[in-house]
Image 1 (cartoon, rainbow, N blue to C red):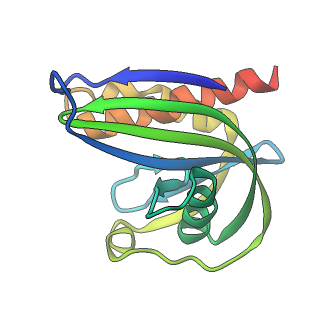
Image 2: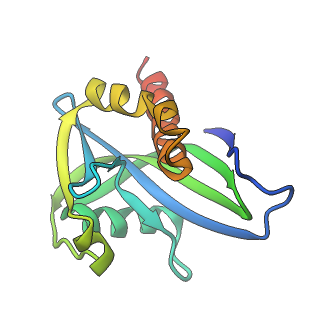
Length: 162
């Protein structure tokens, strides 16, 4: 399994806070399941923060169901990404997952306000979308960083297929 560091332009000399989360790469018939925020237009690989004593794998299953209504079965972890922004170190565990059934979406109020919806789009379209991360450098370090993270993860995923 690969480990990669991403150093944000706004990172502090040392980090004082750490947040861990898990994300699921779910590909079916050449399409990947993404979370789309219809209000802002943002796209993300589904996932979110580890809660309490849950494992990264358990977090992945819970977050994907909450955001998309899809129940997944993690097959393998293929990447751990360490990102540094301001005083934070973010750890993202990426899993290759298969869709195993339908569950119940449970969006937070913030996700509802952002218009979060699950969308299946062609994998290559997703790679192209996230490849434009640098276009957001002047306007939003958060969006630039999110898209760089997802682009990096999808590039690593594609390497596992070769």
